[in-house]
Image 1 (cartoon, rainbow, N blue to C red):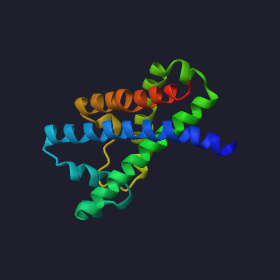
Image 2: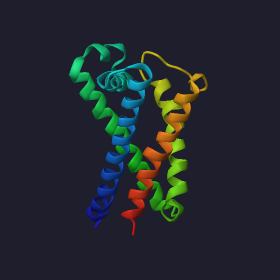
Image 3: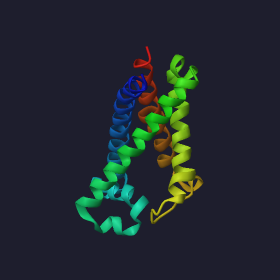
Image 4: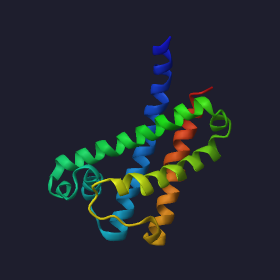
Amino acid sequence: MASSGKSQALLPILIGGLIAGTLDISYACIYSYLRRGTKPWVILQSVASGALGQPAFTGGAKTAALGLAFHFLIALIAAAVYYFASRVISFMITHAVISGIVFGICVYLVMNLVVLPLSRIPVKVPLWAYPWPSLIGGLLIHMLGIGLPIALVVRKFSK
């Protein structure tokens, strides 16, 4: 029966993580291009720079692909965290909208206060120094593009 539990978890984690990852990276690429003219592959390389540091920006398509893989891995981990937490906290299923929004805020805070400061990303800007459009946009995409879709997918597969 253990494999049945694993297979039940796999689909909502994959679907939720892939939807959230797609929405988030799309937002990052569009926002960065419109605000600063940054090309999408540079955004992907910046994700890879979390592990590789500055050399990620000279790695071409390989480090952009690695950044995309890291990005989706993080989204899948977020979906897994939500899924397994919802097995213990039923409120996350019965109140998926509010739970997803709060979860998105939590993901944003963990990424910006824990993951990024511990990473090798070359330029580290403290959360309180973000320009308002970046802060608000970042919070909104995490609430509505990451937390909410993950919560709704997990709820759908929990019935």
